[in-house]
Length: 175
Image 1 (cartoon, rainbow, N blue to C red):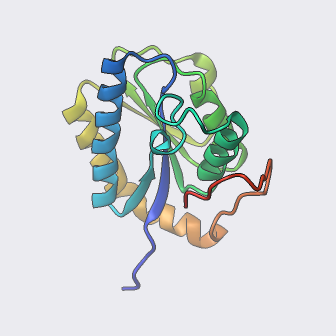
Image 2 (cartoon, rainbow, N blue to C red):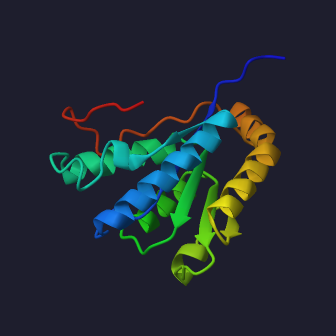
């Protein structure tokens, strides 16, 4: 069997206006999700490693936009972690929808998600979970049953490339 390049996924989650405890909890959860993805041959991009408003205050607003936009567009899949309200997740969702990137909403049972987000015309699926063990189990199952279809999609479409929107010489390529 031919060795396949790992799929690329982007994890959108709230980063703005979180308490330090909430930041740690979300970061820890995201790192666990990244491990599960890696075990399933999916490279998960975590924006907070590169464009977090607290950890990277020197990154300009246009650089954050272009960087995160490029990462969404060139992903095979967008995960949206719905645990807290967010100002940016809707933007990432719309970028994915506009470029045909499938979206998976990871929705904690006690989290209220806006009708606008869930009503998006993105090709999407919802994974509703009770606790982290439930999330990890469902994510593992989802990946195991979806990887093949995502590889077929990538083969049919070719490697995604950004369109150069907002290109700037002062941006760092994080790929």
